[in-house]
Image (cartoon, rainbow, N blue to C red; front, side, top):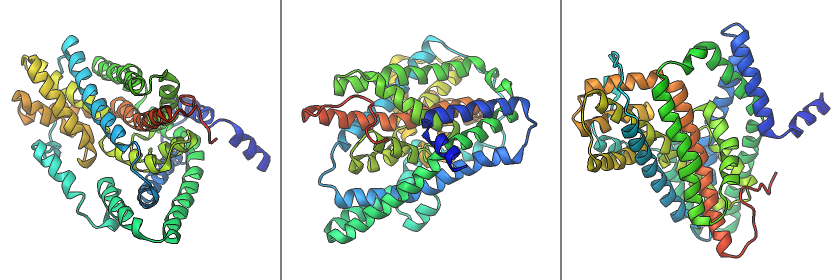
Length: 413
């Protein structure tokens, strides 16, 4: 048994995940629905990731700031997060204008109360999440609060002696080891998640509202394979695709099935470590990206709002489209602070065109129908680009220092 486990662990993790994916899909098609033990594997995997991620982020950020000599490439990373989110929204606006779709609106009763009433409410929610008890932030996985307290404590601990700083470093290393164990269980977790999705929804999840899903997913693929690589090339002057494909294969694939940027934080941390990136940087940029780097959400908000406008016969001029892009980008950055994520921010964008909340919430209802695919692709784009931009910023620094490196090469396997 020990030799069998050793051989299994010797296979590349991505290959093991693909095996789990294939088995899960086959079980979803041919096995009876509701096999508890298979569903449990998926639930336990996501639960384990979500449980360990807040603690990991808290201690990693404290350790990084307490021991850091400088903030490194954080300015570059944050700028890339902001630019990527805005460009994603712009791509969605252009696509929705070139390929206008009209929606068959359905009843959205029962979800109107969950929608924020304005951008001020979103920003207020984000600000209020900072001023919370740190224990409460950890218990509720409030990453905005976790980041705020970890940054404050980390900066304060810069005044502590070396032994105390080392203690936090050791704690973060220990938690990182636990994360490594959890990630090794990904093939079984993915198998359970795929089985549950396929057995519950069947193949019809790929046919309903096909045109809208196709347009949304096409925009996200365009951003992942064209816009993001161009941004990486612009700052590194090197072929970005080895790094792009690595992040999509490793981070994007896992995020697609967990459908949670927060749950994917440990996966991204592990990938950054394997790329040999500076822990002081990625321990801050990765959880920050899970909070504000929301290109996929920006696509969803812009696309659905413009589909609603086309359905209502509202003409959208260029200045209004640009304003929509900016509004969607700001709203998307706050999506992690709103229950329901990007879908419930659609009414904010719809309000720009004078569309009533009743109509907007019917659009949200359609979003919930296609959410199986939309949310998975959205999360995959968001989470994979966290690693992509973190690595690109560091590669830029390495190039300036004259250091030899290969884009997307793993140095710590």
